[in-house]
Length: 555
Image (cartoon, rainbow, N blue to C red; front, top):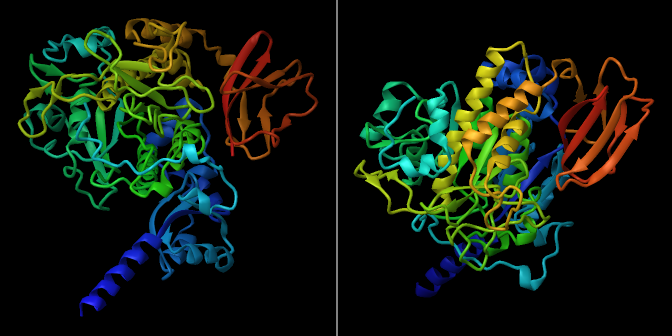
């Protein structure tokens, strides 16, 4: 009997180990025309209004995964469907390698399969032995270190001149923030969240980890993160955006570290976009996993390799302002930022102490392709938070997990100014407002002219950023706002939509500022960019001493 039990145990263990995670990428979306002609079937009215305001067109990326494709795979007995992403048109599955590879022959709608274990992919990055990452999972949350009286939150807000925004009436009103995290226990009962509950500022949420509506559960990390933005105890504590509204999403399964969490995050970001969210805070990051074969290497931190970072870039192209903690690996052998903080369009936030000195645990940049990360810093060493059990103010936790939401709240307050500017002027809509905002914040930072690997651009000054952002808005030339390109994202060619085509000049730059293309005296409105690798590029269009900058996503 003992031998039989041992055999069964070994068999079950082998089967568990042999199960692999993979993404099945689909070829198309057959019903895209129907959805694009009926946009409210895939996006809320607020989401559509945000797209209009930011001059972002709907396209195939917004269309849901085809339900027939999904159901066929869902009913497949040889694999298990775990999650999906409409942005990447991919379904996250688990199964034996042979069964997963057999799907390609069985289903004509599958374009390709990408295994989380890169060694199983026909083409992919080849890592040298020194680059391989050993499993190093631990509960990453256990060591995560108008006129308001800010109380205990005074330093972390005034360090960034966030009080100046509040004095201008910019407190996050009319902004919706999504928190994607590990759980929000006691947010529904604690006194510190009574204000946002009674003012109906919690709009809803979802538990992607357990596939249910209960988001007031799981790990307390999200509760502490939310308190940095929305907590309020009169004369004792104020978050950075006390008048914002919130969606609370759980994507992290704190007791394990699996590649599935990346896909769940993308699902949550897609939900945030569809609901019309303005700003997303993520105090999560991914580098190594329980299954060492799924772990990333530093080479993967290029903003376009990991599944989550690819999703983040698409989210930014939809108009979301994404703020992410840089990570707490500064003292570890890994050292560098994680994903999706490596994504070009994500605002990545490192940590300083109360005196503005860098926290040793704050993760380093640059990205593996040489970009500055993190961009900015906030107080993450012993900031003031609300304890999820007692509801009292605590300063016992540290981490970029908290400098990120402190920053997120102020980003939302600054973005609120954009709404005021458009309402109180003749302007109608302006593409790249998010880019204007981010550049205003970065340029206000104390080390902007001398960035460093751990500091990035340094500590921003939101008084300076507000003035810079307002100046940027005032310089927008409405007569040149009609210039668009489509499709964007682009596969091979795009068309420039402009009435007068005479004397137009184009320049195309990489995210590192390298000029890749320059065109003058164009004879066609169609431009071929098939030679470009997948990624984010900056297209500059010049005409009559005017300039239009458009972010181009090559897929």
